Structure formats: C-alpha cells, structure tokens
Length: 354
Image 1 (cartoon, helix red, strand yellow):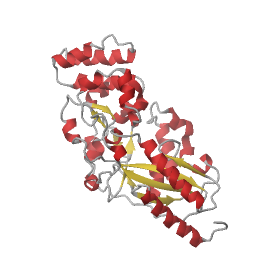
Image 2 (tube, one colour):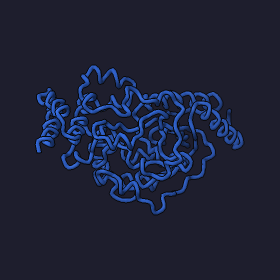
Image 3 (tube, helix red, strand yellow):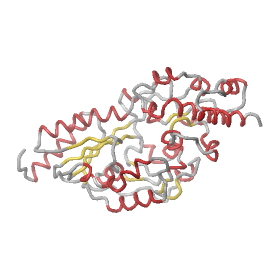
Image 4 (spheres, one colour):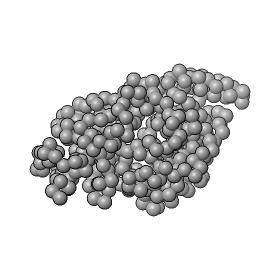
C-alpha cells in the first residue's frame, strides 16, 4: 500500500479489527499520540513520590506520554484488550474470607499475560506490516514506558475509573491491555467517557486506603505494590491490612458494580495453575526455592522472586488464626538465610505471642 488514500486506511482499520478478533482479542481501538493532560498528571504524581520504589517510572518521566519519542515516526497507538477472568477459579470472596488460604490476584493465576499477549500482538503487527507501507512499529505489553490506560481510553476501550483501572461498560475491568505503536495515519476512534458517577465503592473498600481520592492512587500504600513491586521490608503499618493477600489485590475490582458485566475468558492459558486460586498458606510457605521456580514457570508471579514470595506469605501467616500448624511453619523459617524473611517471620510470630 503506497501513498495510501484515506479510504485505504479506513479499510485497513477495519481489517485490523477483524484480525484482532481472529487472534483472540475482545476489542481493539486506535488513538492519536497527544496526552497533554495525562502527562501533566503523571509528572505531578511523580513529584508527590507516589511511585515509591518504582524508579523506572521516574526514569522515563514524560516520555511515557510521548510515544513518538520512544519510537520515532509514531502517529497512532493501536490498543487491544483481552479478558482474563478464569472460568473455574475458586470464588475470590471465599478465599479472602478464609485466612488460612493465600489470595493471589486473578490476573496471575495462569500463564504470564506478557507472553500470551505479546505473541498475539506480534502476529497482528505482522499482518498490518504485510498489508501496508508501514516503516516502523513496536509492540508493548506492560513492558515499556507507555501510558497504556490513557491510550486505551482515547481509543475507546473504556474509561479510567476512580481506582485508576480501565473499565469497560460491557466487560468490566478484568482484562489485559497491549499496544502497537505505528507510523500509519489510521482513523482514530472516539474517546470513552467516564461512567463512575457518584460511586466510591473502590475508595471505601481499599484495605490500605491507597486510593487517596477519586482517580488518585498512592502506589506506596497499594497492596499490589507492597507485595509485587516492593523488594524491601513491607512497612509494619500495612501488614495487618494485607490479610491473606500474598500476590496483588483485587478488592477495588471485586466491589466495582461494572464488573457484573465481566466476561470469563476462553483462553486456556489463563486457567489457574498449581491450585494457586486458593491453597493453604502453610503449604505455600513450605515450598523450597526449586519448587517455587518449577511451579511459577511461565507465570507472572516468578518476577517477584522466592524471597519476596516467602516474605509475603510470612505476613499472611502472621494474620492467620493462631494454631500449632501456623506457629510450627513460622518457626521453621526463624533462622532463614534471608534477613528479609527473618524479619517478617519474627513479626508474624509476635502476632501469635499476644
């Protein structure tokens, strides 16, 4: 396609939608590259230090809102979404209500979404390349400095809710996002409007009050940050609030009324593995590092490493009902080689000594 006319790009956009459906994406949209308001909001968020130990957020700064600086020649951002809510996972509320079980965020129960989406997006990009005069494109799946939720909103995939997750009127918020940055001047889609209204369920339910105001998240208080991004000691002020959440947190999504429209996934890759949708804490705590590596192979969980995995479970055991089984499990790691683990085990044992 050389010197393409507007009609050619309209036809190509229609083909992109068809190809994306064939590749298993539930929706695709196209956005321009200008995000002046989101860029200003990002810089203010960084100035407030709400990114915590996520230094990469500050390192890229405003470039996260400027895809043309990341990939020169970029004119459009193609955004896709893929549902991930598994069909056969144990009920999340039942797991959260049972302090003897470990809660893992629903998105991490199956295969690492980075790998699943990247493979599909690469195929979509290949199709676009084969049917156009594109000279440059790049695929992203939560893997680079791109304000994916802002671009997805502008592409019509949903709006950014008060909890700062993307919400779709017909699919809730249990979905992954991915992007293709392209130099093709494709027709853009209409931006989605906000439909949160006066609802503040997500704000009120947050265990650590991380949603400090509508559309304002202090990541340093967020359980997902504390259990996944933070590699050092979890501040004591938040440990009780973690409850039995050992990897991430879904509370703000569980109470969102829009998730009554959430659709279960048909992707076999997102089926829960190794009973991580509700295993006993003492059993998970007993994993050796070799068992951890084997049972998290191909999983997003592996990125936190064994040490932080045990750290998180130690806190959850400190919040569990006192029993000989729990105490024995904690005592078995009192002299753990990791200073980080020993500290959290000591805290947990102290909870059962009172």
